[in-house]
Amino acid sequence: MTEMKAIAKRWFLLAVLLGFGIVWLWPGAMSWTESVKPRLVIPSALFLVSWTMDGGRLLGALKNPAPALLAVVVSYTLLPLVAWWCGALLPLEDLRIGMLICACVPCTLASAVIWTRLAHGDEAQALMASFAGSGLSWLVTPTWLASLTGQHVALNYPAMMLDLAATLLVPVALGQAARAVPLLQGIAVSRRRLLGVASQLLVLAIMFRAAFEVGAKIRSEGNELGLFAIVLTIALCLGNHLVALMAGWWGARALGFSPGSRIAVAFAGSQKSLPVSLMLLQLYFPGYPLAIVPLLVYHAGQLIADTFIADRWANRLAAPPPVRASRV
Image (cartoon, rainbow, N blue to C red; front, side):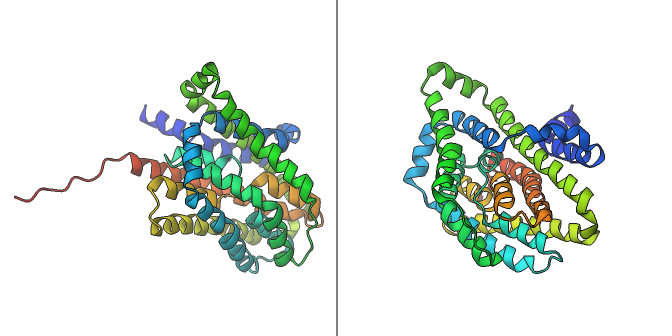
């Protein structure tokens, strides 16, 4: 029974590993992922997250935005600089471009909130950080990419702002509006865990689509990569994520934030959006086909590593405080 509980607890990690194995060994079995539409899947995941979140917590985050702002600062300053410095170690220009794209996009839209929830952190702060980071991305992301890659990224700002509104604001507003209906609020409360699993499944669908594309690129152009380049890319992407995560945690601790806020800052400041990364790669860097490798590696690495980290933090918060022996 204990082993079954452990397996059930790690279902997401096992699903990621199984899906990646299928992509590599039987790619045809994952061809269905080509029909996955990020612009539909991500808002759906965010709606489920918002629907199951108490609106009072969002109001509390608005009254105390400091943790969310710290997460945005870590995400948009530390990560691009670290990625630029580490990228010089990579042997291919495609991989360097891919790492920079990962570092310059906003916080992931749904998984930062989901993983903050799994760790018993302040999910409202994580959601606020996602809002703020995405709201600034139309300006910050192209500025960083133009500076660090030496290319001019000409984004359609009005169109991107509308896309962000449709992707972020609308599903969150609808999720909170659904809670105003007693029946729907009751479903959100009683089925909170199930709806959280549904959100994670939507995140998996996006990841499997990217894995399918990466597998196709490696099979067609993998002779340019080599084992050393792949291993180094994995190490640097994971290292960048963990540096930002710990910087967010320790920075929030130094500022006296609560443990729940520290968790939100750590995840929201270090996780990055795969759909936005894929969009930028396809629209503005089509001449770097292997740049998709760091995009998938960073996203998969952050979710796998954060699964263990969230579990550890959840256990720490759930543990009773140590009892000090009384002096006689």
